[in-house]
Length: 319
Image (cartoon, rainbow, N blue to C red; front, side, top):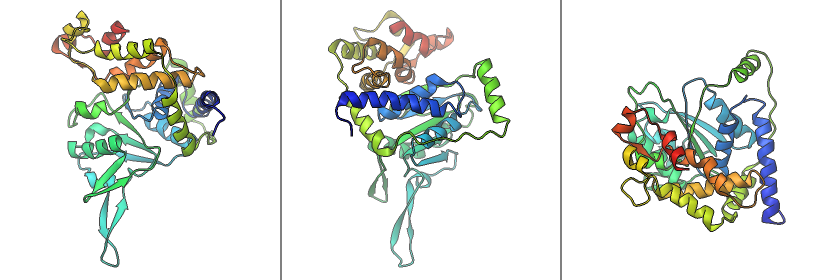
């Protein structure tokens, strides 16, 4: 597609700039969130967006799918949602033969809205799709389209009647991206644009083939041994009771991050470097994405909760 990997990285950096500009026509502010979602997309990972209602989580994801010219499906997770409602089901056709009808999972970008409101068996159907990129219905395996990218949202308040995601499922998400209230000036812009009759005309920046190429390109980005060791050491330091664990980790954490965290720290750092036009990541690239990768992979103990120490404070202490 490009004459060399270096020109591919340049193209990725330019495409990211163009994407941010287009998305900025609809989404005001939230630059770090947009960048984190794009990094996880180009790293072929999935993201969990956590924020209170009304912060444009759904709008952000639908806007991204529009500028990427990908098929987008939204699934509203509810307590009565069954696995077949998302994967698809077999029905009898006119010839009395079973025919598979595809569910909403068969798209490129899936918005799993309020994923913690659905029971574990539906969550686990999504888990297989995320990990294996296939779904199994009535013993038959069906491949999902490429690229396949799940963006799930979770509401941190109103925990009554929810089914918290198990650690194994949380681990499948590359990034945990927190959304906060917009800045005062940004909110003025949001209200101004959303209460007028202005309609943004978005243009397509990338197509599916280009995204698949960039996903493979990110894996080819070379990384020096000291940066790789820094990333792995960062994940290992979060494990209490091990020789590399810090005093703070032993004091406040009951479970640390697994090897998947190390993989995502390296992949995320490679992508963070590439979208900035750098041909190899450095330690700063690892630090830039560390919180997104580690936040949902460490489990605080009672002492940390009692003292009001959150995951971000612990992670920043390790960087």
